[in-house]
Image (cartoon, rainbow, N blue to C red; front, side, top):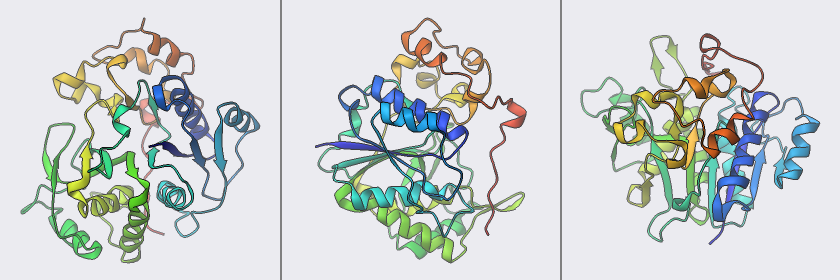
Length: 313
């Protein structure tokens, strides 16, 4: 059984992020360090820098610039959905691993080798937010309609990584492991298209938002195969900036204890690693390797790090 990694890139800070991701795979992924890496730039936009393309060649990264995200070009998060669907349709590897560009590996991801009775592996969302605890929750109506629209009959639950709140199965789309033969990425794209066509968008205090449509569609897709979905442990998709809010067992984890880290855009903040609490071992080999690439440019502060807000076209 073989695997392939999938990531997305665009000009700018995503170039910094995806290069670090690819470097981390080649250095720390153990038996998977030489696995194929496919990097997609599926939305029309400025070309990548010559330096990035050179590094792709050096790291043996397959780069694809086919324009796949046409219908949702106003929503860059759709890049991952269309890229995954294309990868599933064209690649030959048994296991496909989608990873957000703002993540990296620090140990061999042994759990990527899915057992025979498992077709997908993911982590729950960190916080409830657009999720639902079930009957009586203010978001429950949204979820019931989502289930009806996407043909979901079961209603599995998971526990958030922060606060261990029981909610309807809602997964973090920053790391998705699937068995290619099962067509899960194609189903994800179809469910996403269904929700978008019906304009079934969630809302918050500022109105309608489509920021999490990738994860809401994924929730529907995986709910239909819930008995074949594995919940990865805390070492995967570890939310580094939220470290202080995690349960004790994961809050104090060192880099060497983890497998896959999600840092969001915090690597653009000077001194971010040094400021983390509980503190990291600054003498560790992984820490020293990582520090040489930071901070990314452009420099940001916590006040300029605000996540973009996406609204329907």
